Image 1 (cartoon, rainbow, N blue to C red):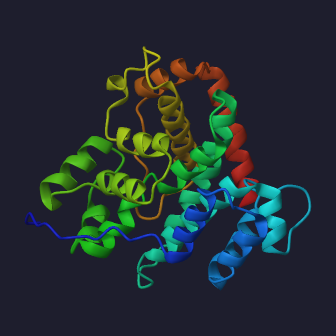
Image 2 (image 1 turned 180 degrees about the horizontal axis):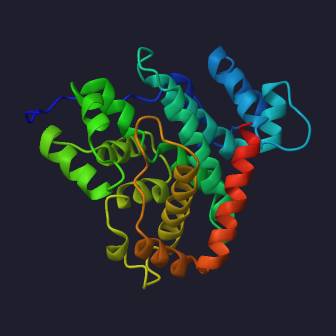
Length: 278
C-alpha cells in the first residue's frame, strides 16, 4: 500500500449537547430545564432512558421517563451518556459499527468494574475511557481509503507495530485521532490523558512513581479490561492489542493484584460474560 494522507474532520458536539453543557455550567440547572432541552432530540432522550436502565448506570427497578432517569443517575452521569451517544450518532450511518460499539461497551463495563477494585477513581471516567479508547478507528474507516484492508491484514495484537504502520502509511494513528476526539468533546482530562498514553509502552509509563497516579490507574483498568475482553471474543475484525506476560506483570504489581488473584478474577469475569451473552 502506498503512503497516503486523508483529511478528516472531528465531529462537532450537537446543539442539544452544547445546550446541556452550558446549562450545567450555570447556576440554573434543574431537572425540568434539562428535560426540556433533551426532549428536542427524540433519539437521544429515548437512548438515555435505555442507558439509565443498564447495570452500569442503573439501579433497582426500571425508569420510564427522562426525569426519572435524571433523578436516578444525576447530571454528571447523564452528561457522560449524552456525550457517548452523540459521538456514536456522529459517525457515518453507512458503516456497520454494531460489533465495534458492542465490544467497546463490554470493555467499558469491565473497565468500570476493575477500576472500582483498584482505585477510588470516577466510574464515569472509567466508562468513558472504555467507550472512547479506540474511537479513532471508525473515523479512519470513514476518512481513509484502504483502512479496512489495512486492519484486515495487520497484526493488531502488537500495538507498537500497528501504530507504526498506521503512521507510516496514513500519516496518522487511531490513538492520535481518539485523543483529538476526546479533546474536542471536552472529555475529562484523565480520560484524554489515558487515551494518548495507550501509545506508550508499559515499561515507559513510569509505574514505579506516584506521578499522575489517577491517570495510570485508569489506564491500567482499561488494559486489564481489554485483556479479559480479548480472551472472550474476537474484537470486530480488530483484535485488541494484548500485553505480553511481563508487561501485564508490571500492571498487576502497580495496582496491587497478585498474578494468582488476577487469574481467578479473570476467570470469574469470563464466566460472567459467557452467562450474559448466552
